[in-house]
Image (cartoon, rainbow, N blue to C red):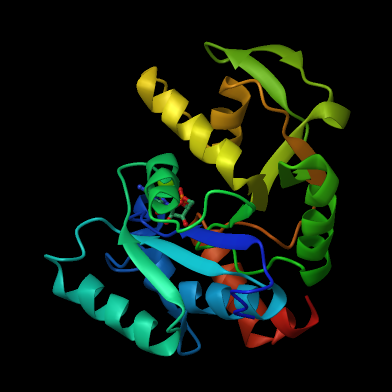
Length: 243
Ligand code: CTP
Ligand code: MG
């Protein structure tokens, strides 16, 4: 829902990656633009998110070379005509840089920003609502799930210890932050030559607390060939309608 007047949420989707781990399988195509049943993965993500969340702006970071690349440029035009509320900007060399460029392009300096990966189409509606609710009191909240597998630490192929599974969580998106604090965190990181691997890392660097909201195992990121094959099955069975 695009509701500039009432919402205090900006949405950012970093979609500037080149999908190296899936490239061979997808014949060189960037995974976010790959189609399953006539729809690009990024298209499914935008459709589902924009139905669930009231938002005031929606920014997407595309692969940075889009002005020189006809294919990416035509995808940009397609997305702008299908979703006229989008603002599409060139992304950066890393995911964190893509998010920080999108923050620079935001029209707002207070309220919230919800960040979601372009290749994570199976988020649950209730978890997103829950995340937004928790952020009303806790400010910075991220979705995560408990590790299903045992996690061991190794050094030079030799096992050192088993980590306590009760304390280990695998981080997902969406994640929601106070936009002013996140902008400040990225600015401070940049000025100190610190390169955070994600938004929570940038916030922790300036001493901000980041809280957990337990998510769902369905909400996996399409990263490997097995993930892509599974995503195809889920979409073909119309499973997303129940999420
Ligand atoms: N991303 C981005 N800008 C980058 C790199 C990644 O916006 N420079 C985005 C991806 O488009 C994706 C999200 O970050 O939506 C999660 O990243 P990942 O799954 O690692 O995607 P890629 O980096 O594209 O894949 P790979 O690591 O296999 O190259
Ligand atoms: Mg990557």
